[in-house]
Length: 160
Length: 279
Ligand SMILES: Cc1cc2nc3c(=O)[nH]c(=O)nc-3n(C[C@H](O)[C@H](O)[C@H](O)COP(=O)(O)OP(=O)(O)OC[C@H]3O[C@@H](n4cnc5c(N)ncnc54)[C@H](O)[C@@H]3O)c2cc1C
Ligand code: FES
Ligand code: FES
Image 1 (tube, each protein chain N blue to C red):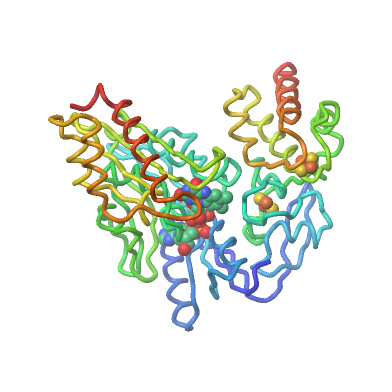
Image 2: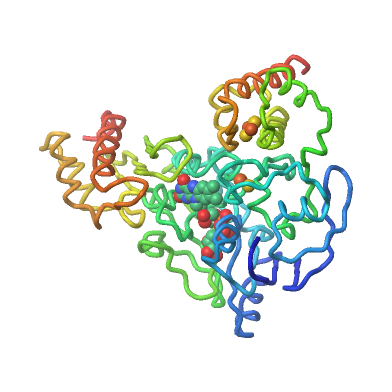
């Protein structure tokens, strides 16, 4: 049985391919721990309520709101943040398609898009919409983001 | 940030979970079960909930089962809503839970958590009421299998220290014609103004609702009206509405009058969708 007391303790998180020691309370969310213990500020803090998707990261390749997970329940699981996807072609496509304005929502969109491309590269428009509805953008009109996501999926299927 | 500290336990078995609950409780501490944890985290952050300890059920293999076993479909309480939808094991349940929250949240929200939610919606309840589901429950006296409709009385009524292990549904329910309708205020993602699930069984419609009253329900009186083939569709709906088990919710999401209007439309759509299969 995994146990963690009510005072601070040191645990290991597997983030972006590396193992990191962090000092956490059981009550610390993964979002807080990634940002404040590991300096991984790509996961953004916004609603902290599962509503906006700005804090999206991948756990075992699945998109998750890091504000809705405790750090302690995420040990022993591979975690990917936007810092782990540096210079991927998704980033380039988002820039090329003008899918970024202020950029606050962008890491969340890119990680969600990456997970979709990895698991369902042939996703229909309906599935793309279903996945991407998890992320809110307050700057763009979503059209540019939609085009970027579709371009990423097309590139993925052409490669296969 | 969650403004209080708590102990975290992730047992590997049912017995370990029950024993841990008892041990912690006997120290005078408040302990609660934790599944997807999304409600625990969001409610705790705003001081609507607190605990001295949580017991995470995700490490218990029985709670992670999602399979067809003999005549039964077995759905573990800690299975995420997306896994249920993707498996297509019980299509009506898959469709109903696919309408809960957003795709990313559904990777974390579990069916056990949805059924036990403190919110009024608990949309996962609807297919289980229609399918005469059973639930396997763990407690210090051991495990027991009970009818879902006996355990769900406006909300899940488990005894102290008990938790839901699995949901059991007869396989035949996966093949009845069904419809699941969710109407939200504005965007596709959101709490329901009206959520309706219906199946056609033995030429009769069975219907269950969420968002309409302060709890999800299925009503035999309403179904009797909806199945009264001597009446026009309009009259059946009018009769059904006069038999609601509780007042229609009137809140910031939707006024009572608007919910009623949406409910009438949803019932018309459901009766229309199932018309070939009901009398
Ligand atoms: C962004 C968002 C949108 C949402 N939208 C909807 C919606 O549209 N419709 C809807 O119906 N709901 C919606 N919800 C509510 C959600 O379904 C509930 O909050 C649900 O409780 C979350 O499940 P969980 O597994 O994360 O629960 P947890 O936080 O783990 O648990 C919730 C409660 O259930 C109890 N519990 C969990 N598992 C068990 C078990 N096996 N046995 C006994 N008790 C147990 C816990 O003790 C706790 O009290 C939404 C939630 C979020 C975060
Ligand atoms: S900050 Fe996590 S979903 Fe908004
Ligand atoms: S680019 Fe500013 S919120 Fe999306």
